[in-house]
Every structure is written in C-alpha cells, then in structure tokens.
Amino acid sequence: MKKSTLACALAISLLGGSAVLAQHYTGPSTVAAGTASGVSSASASYTGPSSVPLMTAKQVLDSGKDNQHVRLQGRLVSHDGGKNYTFADDSGRLPVEISTQRFPPGQSISAEQRVEIVGEIDKDFRSMEFEVDQIRLLP
Image (cartoon, rainbow, N blue to C red; front, side):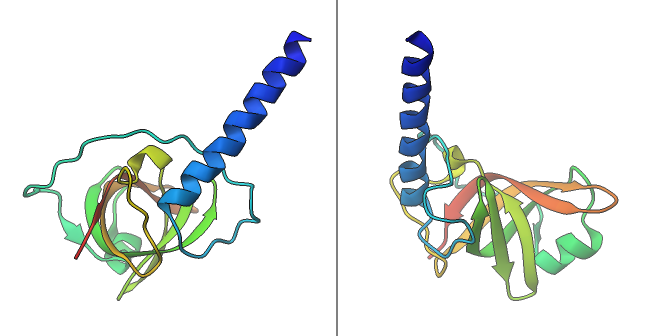
C-alpha cells in the first residue's frame, strides 16, 4: 500500500512539473505533449554590468572552450525535451540546457522573445552544449 501511495504522489508531482515547465517556455517543442518535467523555483538575478564576454552562437561553436563562461543574446527557438532547448541568434543555432528554476519566475518566454543567457560551455570531443545559469528577457 505504501509503495502505491508513493508511486501515485511521484506521478502527480511529475505531471505538475510539466505544467510548470509549460508556463515558462511557450514556443515550439519537439517533445510529445505531457512528456517534459521540471520543478519551479523563484530566484533573484543580477542585472548590472558583467565581465562575462558576449559571444555569438557561431563563436561558441567555432572557438568556445570547455568550462568557459559566456553570454549570448538571441532567442530560444525550440524545446527539445527535458532540459534541452535550441538557442538561435543571427549567426546560428546551438543546443542549450536549462533547468526550470533558471527561467524568470512568473514570466513566460516565447520563441519570438529576445533573451540574454549566461552560462558555461560544456565541450568534449564529439559534442558541445551550453549550460544556462541565468536567463534575462531583453526589450
């Protein structure tokens, strides 16, 4: 009995997490409806000047170094499942990983909304991904 109660509670929390994720990103998705999950958490963010360099998607792909911190400005053009999204700017596209708690609390982001993302390049011999630490909406 305890196992079924725990399983039911887990299922409800995962389904609730899908609704939370849907509130944050409202653009296109390559995931079947109801398969994404996440947990929301309100977090404050710094909005002043930064010494983290502003780069383009092409620069990150061509010359970005593993563990390098950078800023990118563009759009989240697709939700690709779980924490995986596609970021695009005028120079190209790159895969990004965004935990739901990184989204601005109480604000939705569409595929047309310009954003600035700050994070770290995760690069190995065969693949590259950008792990987002902060998202800020741009005017």
